[in-house]
Length: 236
Image (cartoon, rainbow, N blue to C red; front, side, top):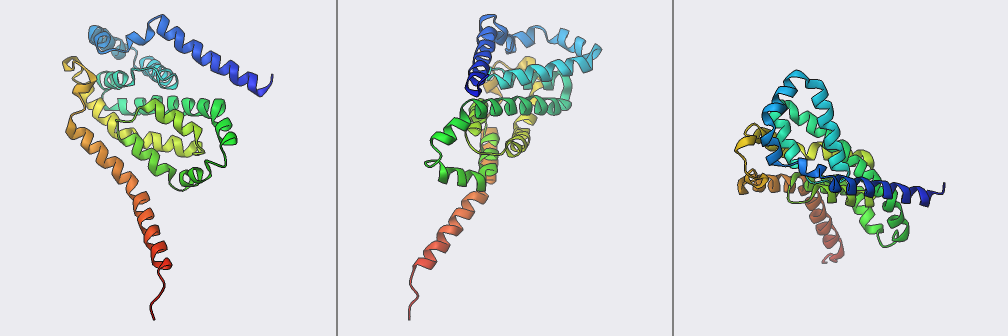
């Protein structure tokens, strides 16, 4: 089978999986109403079958993130409710694995084509990513205002190394995961996910993102000053 045919087949399989999940309403299960309705049963089942519950949870999280299905926030809240702070580990595994799959799919399906088609135009962009890509990724991960799935896809279109993408994802989602895991203990008292992110928490995430980006800004300022000083002729 030709590579282009493989890519088309994979793209069709991904699209079919997304459509099937929507048609059969599986995405509707990832809602606060559903978890509040079955929270007692979930707690009881988790107590009796802890390891299988963890395995199913991680698998569902991977699928949700890999296929860009809304519901990751609800899943993280549920992890806090069911597993306590151990949920941070399970969320990190599921979210990171799902993000890596989405990243690889985007790179394999269209990322290589984009780089070959627009390689010359993207030369300076690729150099910037090579030098400071991890700072940009950490900033985007720290700030919850940027959609998680878009970062996965966008990164796949660049030349960010897989290892860099993976570790920045694992580190970058930790602050937000802790907030949602902690809040998950009060899952029945939350009316909507927006109740969690107060302006103070969002501001903290923004500052965290700016902190990750600060080395890039400092480097650019120093480089600009250096080039300016060398361009100014010395006085006699």
